[in-house]
Length: 212
Ligand code: NI
Image (tube, protein in one colour):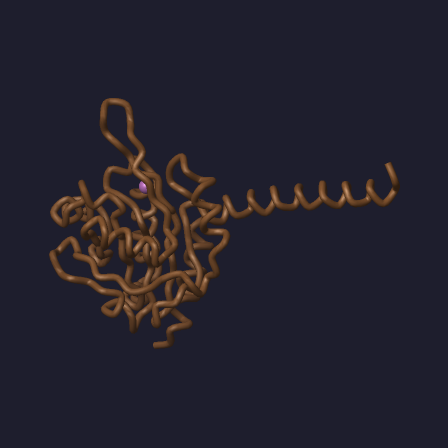
């Protein structure tokens, strides 16, 4: 083998190792609740942050129509999940509840919405029941399957129905809380992997950036 050929092969090998490393980093940065990590990461990795977010029209757990326009004017956090989720969703909603306590009066300067990816089971009544466990300011949202598909697409959020033993199903889904500025633009995210201080710093930053 000629020396030049060896150099080329070495470079290719280094590039391959680099790609694997990037994949691992992304999988940590973009947590998925469920078994579909790789598919979701591949999709998210190709998207720019400025393309995250967009118009939606959904129904709240109190029966009100809520649009992206209703949320603008204040920063907002968007989390996709479902009420039958065994761990990550309730944990995340509990953490949001705790962070809102820690923000004190500043918690009123940001709105949190929980968008179900399981509208089949998560009716507004089911959401109203579920949300009693969390801060009453968090707005749970449901809609038709098409409306949910549209909002998830706007946020580049992934979700998928996964059959379980016994004929039921669970949902795999993107498990970050998207932090949007008061114009509805994506700024950063928090997730259940982070410690509470990191989450709080990010939330304070988003609130501060919006001004008073
Ligand atoms: Ni979940």
